[in-house]
Length: 183
Ligand code: ATP
Ligand code: MG
Image 1 (cartoon, rainbow, N blue to C red):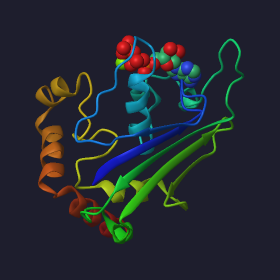
Image 2: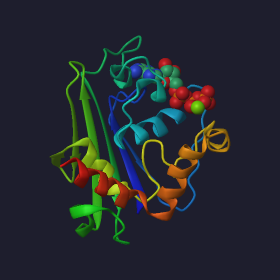
Image 3: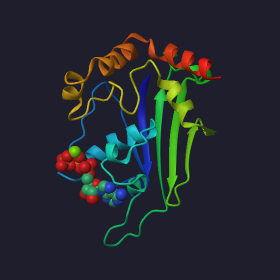
Image 4: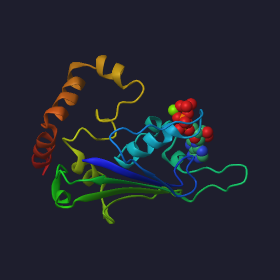
């Protein structure tokens, strides 16, 4: 699966609707300190289901909503959409039949949160099911952030095992077994 583009609106410093196309195998984002480079990766991990505000460098989840600036009033909601090319048909579950998968998350100031896949409302875990076994998730190894390398090196054996199981494609089966056992 390949991330083709990212659409943000009202997310952190991206007050206005912003559309990033990721055309090549290698895309660099450059800009001065504080211009919003890391906010883009925060947006990606947020859509994938990150539920801990501190992982997104905030105190509460509402901190991802654009909070206003000198001339601009705060946004009422944050919305981010990731558009994946699924021509390789690697997505999990029923969404694998689609050549393109658009995953969107919206949060309003009153705390209402909703995920969508190809415009249909879904649960957070439906989003996670799409990516289980692909290495992509809010804290999975497809995103190597500052500190991730040392987190892997310093992780306890049980944590290291989770990385290896995701790389080996075992984690989605373990998740399914866990679900079946809990039914
Ligand atoms: P560096 O090069 O220092 O790593 P960066 O380009 O990665 O910088 P970010 O950390 O992505 O910068 O962006 C930080 C900016 O985002 C700050 O100016 C901060 O005020 C702004 N910001 C974060 N959350 C919000 C929000 N909710 N509303 C408005 N602006 C926000
Ligand atoms: Mg940064």
